[in-house]
Picture 1 (tube, rainbow, N blue to C red):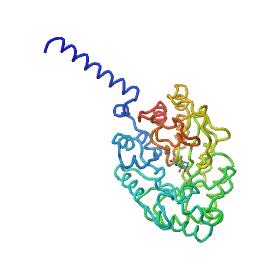
Picture 2 (cartoon, helix red, strand yellow):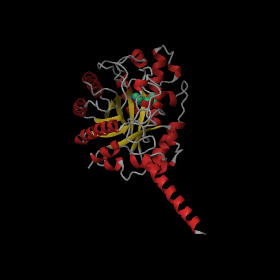
Picture 3 (cartoon, rainbow, N blue to C red):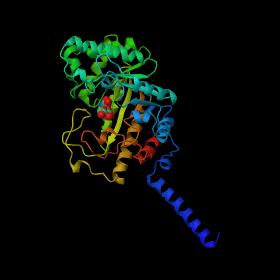
Picture 4 (cartoon, protein in one colour):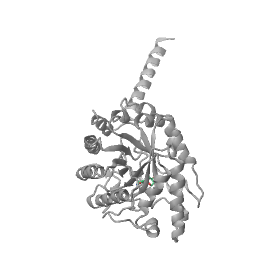
Length: 378
Ligand code: XIL
């Protein structure tokens, strides 16, 4: 080999290794970008479980890098959609357990707990419920669904969100097919049936905005009603769909204290902090509440400015400092998704936006918020 060749080889080798390093730093390639030494579940091991929401492509392990991230970072997960009514009972008295069983398999493989979500909810119901107008049919669905599904997964899942989002913002009962045909006591009945079918499973009530005073009072009354009926409820899940820079810390603190005073565990079950402007009058995680697209509502299509990245990191850090203060009362903190690309907030309440609400970016690289959260555990 003459000298000119040798020099050319040295230059090419240098350029290739330099560009690989650059890619890793900017997070443009998946492999090298995801290599955090730290682990959320390890950092908070003595404090509370750390969870995420998972979908089928993650559980079917189409990308081994994703599986590695999930198993290293999280001790528990909630199926984002696959254990909801519409998916698990697609036809009248016809159940499809395939996807839920996959979730159980994944959890066993990686030694993770499952929070199953959810038995009774007004949304994502089977389509056959849409035109249903008689109490007997509603009662049949209600009883059969809870009993069949909860008993099948008893001992396989750690907990169930037995009832999801049953209250209005003022703490009164939300109008739903269950409330209409079964009456206000349907919630107590749901827990009674779940307790019978799943004696080894933790049973929770889950909702959004319940840190706000009126809705919080509604939850306190509800838990007391369930307990007074001699029925078991083990915890309350505060969803935690908030906005970076506007997290209601005082209300959250009051809620932790008031709920735990009832003798139940407090969970943060669907945590994400939106960084996008909220459409007018919109401060809810009500899945039925959509808003129209406008470019002004989608300002960070090309990337998140450092200033906003820092607001996000600070909000997360303050939140986890609060969680740590009450770690004896908190059972679990679950993020609603693994990385920003997965987040439902790219499509809700406005379709087609680019949001950045989680701790891992679209290349699975930990964001500044990840490191700030880990620091709060030390
Ligand atoms: C959301 C999922 O993330 C979306 O994929 C789906 O299209 C709609 O539901 N409160 C809940 C969750 O309890 O089940 C919702 O999940 C988000 C709001």
